[in-house]
Length: 130
Length: 130
DNA sequence: GTAGACCTTCCCATTATGGGAAGGTCAAGG
DNA sequence: CCTTGACCTTCCCATAATGGGAAGGTCTAC
Image 1: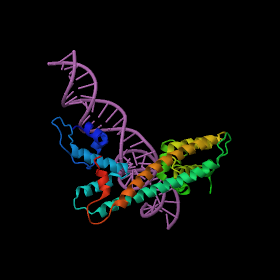
Image 2: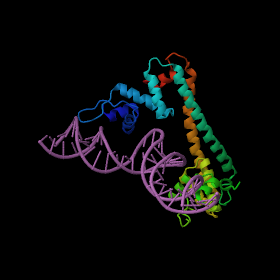
Image 3: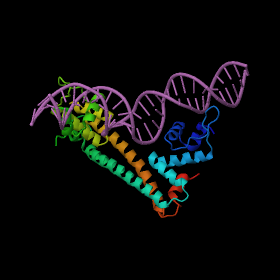
Image 4: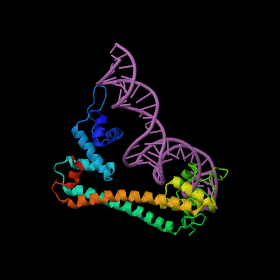
């Protein structure tokens, strides 16, 4: 299977497959005589794993850890859970930060008449001298 | 006022002040004979405006628009409100995306025993063949 | 006059992803 | 056999916002 077929099968772009290889997330695999990368079903399986972890927001460095655990038949599920919970905490922090921005902005927008006049609490707040 | 003093007064790092100047968000201002950038209270006011907008998550390109409106005594508050609401929609989308990840991950983590055994629904889900 | 705090510009790194150029390969069809 | 189109290769660049750090000039207080 060439890289394009692996990309279609896994949902990971060819660009990203090469990138993952370059940062050592994927092993440097077989090549044809012409230098074309070759992939098999296990590679596609691995790429799907990475894609799903990305879909859950795991950064590539965490995915590296997840892959190590996935590969290890003697892993403790506690280790996997710990990675997941650390990531949940990270997501929670980011959600909270965005929600704070959102709430502030919603309050300001609600107070803004939104008409033809220039007076606007949003700009007033941003320009506040405090 | 040198850049360091303006940075302290505005809460924007000297690095960022230079950057904002380089992308044209700030005018290229006065310099001393030695080439030191000089700032006054209006500059600090402007920098604070930018910082507050950044604190609300506005990207610099939106802040550029906000500054234009701020500068315009004939602006319509509707234009400001529209920028704010577009940004709220953006924040909402990001929050929703993160919350989806979070919820999925929380459900998986809850189902994981987190003990010494290798079996783990989190990894199983990521590895799913579907 | 020198030390220490500041300033300047320039380059590099981050995170994950894509665009695009220049050039080689391969399969199908005339 | 040769061409065409789809595919592959590597390499460089860009994104958004921020910071680190080097090499070198400036200023102030002692």
